[in-house]
Amino acid sequence: MIGLTSLWTNRLPMGPNLDRRRALLVLDKIDEILAWEKTKEQERDVRFVELGQYLCEARTGQYWRLENLKSFDDFLEKRFPQSRRKAYYLMAIHESLTKIPKQRLREIGWRKAAEMVKVARRDGEQFDCAPWVHKAKELPREEFKREVERHLTGKESEPWEMIYFKVYKSQLPVIEQALETAGLMLGSDRSRGYMLEMICADFLAGANIENGDSNALILSLDRLFGLLPQLKQQEFLSKVSGTS
Image (cartoon, rainbow, N blue to C red; front, side, top):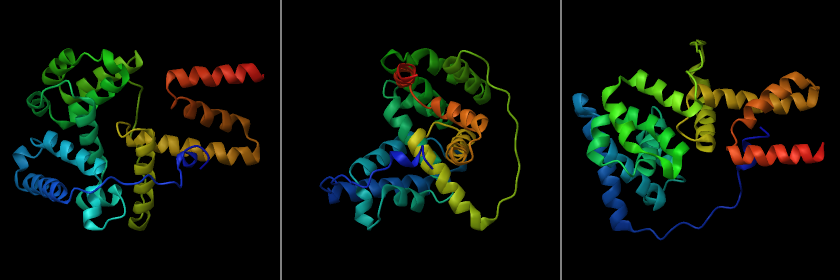
C-alpha cells in the first residue's frame, strides 16, 4: 500500500535500560487490574485511569522485554486478546487528559474520556477541560459523542449506516492486524469504519495508478489528503500550485 506502508522504517531505536524491579511491579499491577475487571462486572471500568498509566509506562520502559516478547503489540495481544483498541484508548486518555483530575475521569468513564481525547488533541494548549467534563457528566454517551463531532467539524454528524458481511475466522487475524496498523498510524481515536475507509482509499490509490481510472484515483487521494493536519495540507497545496 503506497500511503500507509511508506511510513515504516527498518531502523529500530535502541531500547532503554530495563529496570527489572519496576517492570515486575508494573506488569503485576496491569495483570491485577485486568483480573479484577473480570470479577467486578458492575465496576469493571473504575480502574481504567490507573491501567492507562501503567500501560504507558510499560510501553515507554519496554517492560515487555521481561517476558521475552518481540514488541509492545505482542504484549497487548497477550493481555487484550479480543481487541487492543481499548488499551490504546486508555493510554491516549492518560497522555492527553492530564489537566483533568483522575477522580473526575473515573466519574466520566473511559468511553466518554476517549471521545474527549479527540477534543484535547484538536485544541492543544487551548483545550478547556472544565466545560467538557460538565458535558460528559450530564449528557448520555451518544449525545456527548455528537457534541464532540460538532466541535471538531463545525457541523452535525455525517449520516451513517451499518454494513454487514460475513468473514471466515481464518480471515479475522489479517483484518484485525490491518485495522490495528492503520490505528497506530492514524491515531487510535479514529473509528474502525474510518480505518477501513483509509485502507480502501490507499488500495484504490495504488490500484488506479496502474489502470488510469482518474475518477477513482481522485476520490481516494481526496480522502487521504484529509488525513493531513491543516498546516501540512496548506504546504501540499502550495507545492502543487507552484508546480502547475
